[in-house]
Length: 118
Image (cartoon, rainbow, N blue to C red; front, side, top):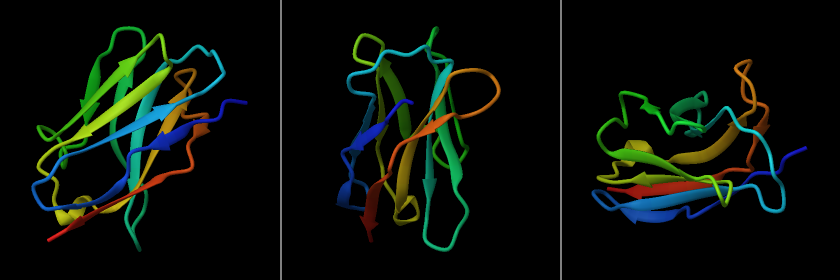
């Protein structure tokens, strides 16, 4: 079992930046990919972006492309989500997830709230 711990959420204003982190403290694991998802009130959870662990390839949802950047620190088993030019519609609980194989995401964090005021 791998526990993922997110940090860095908070309340910001439109246009501000915020950085989230996700770590798996005390564990080593083989990751295929780590991803970020979000869920706004009354909406389904949606994919934000992901990073292939070995080569660092990233890909993003159209809604955040050009504003959000995912990076990883292999030595620390940590992934980061840098969010710039935040909009009220980015308000959601953000979750990180770990995919150990191509089959799908195996482990999820507890989520961290991001609120963007207009």
